Length: 449
Image (cartoon, rainbow, N blue to C red):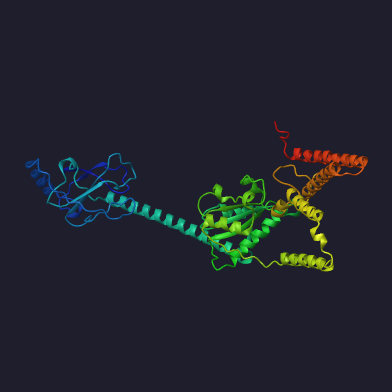
């Protein structure tokens, strides 16, 4: 029995292009390849015209599943399909990347350089390998489908849970487990705004409470707006409920606002610059629009406290003018206007506007030893009591300067003027030294050299 040497290129074969020996049987169908007589006739024809290169019939590739060789004409009667593997092909590459050539049986063969092997023959082994590859492909597709389905179900559950919590309250409170599951862990197709804060009374963070009020206003504006969707959620993590989250993010200050995008890790711009911009709801909404393209129109509840205070002030001034309607010379009193101007200057230079914006606590009590601090140890912050102390010191220094000026310009008794001068000088020296000591305690590098 004659032996015919061929090259296999079957999906899932152990080695691409492995040579095997199969018996050349007579009477095989055209689907299995060329018969022995046809092959001998074609080899004789090629040997008679060695320099003739027959025309090759190529077919465009169709889309096929991974690990399959499927071209137009494959498996049709009278058509032999063969695959030339690319150089350096490894096991598992299948027939992907090779060159397909097909020619009707009895009309021509590939060029001599590629005709070292006869067209592939279908064998029982080939059918077995094809079945194994098909089973493996089906298993891979099933695993992928199961993974996609599981991921989609998990994402749907997370979004449904967040929507349920949002329907109850605009800001979702989270601990460490909820934060890692709904904010950090994928899959996630929504953005999350997280406020890291410390609202417990023992923390004495009045800034946190004020920032939380603005945050609630912003979250309520989003919750009750017509543009509300499941693409953005507002959450809050309190230090006493999620200290592990603060440690995981290396965060040591509060309040802090962060944006967690649907994909990837937060960038530097995803942390709100509270020190420079403040924590007003309008500023937060502008920052969110820059990071998420979600525009929120802030709706504030009506607040009539300012209107009532203004009305009381106008009534007080109007009543005073009405009572003194027959004697309004005090309006032209320069000393009165000077005192009013000094009060405004003292209030502004002592940090009252900073207190109004940041809302610091009045003082700080150490929970360990119970010691109360009225002066903040950092140059980046202050207490309300510290502002009052600075205001009194500035007022005392100003009073000393006024007394020195009075002693120098008045024409009264010389002894009285000398006493006024000494009192004024004492006020300036003592209270200005006290002011410098406070400055030195806050700016540790003083005196500068």
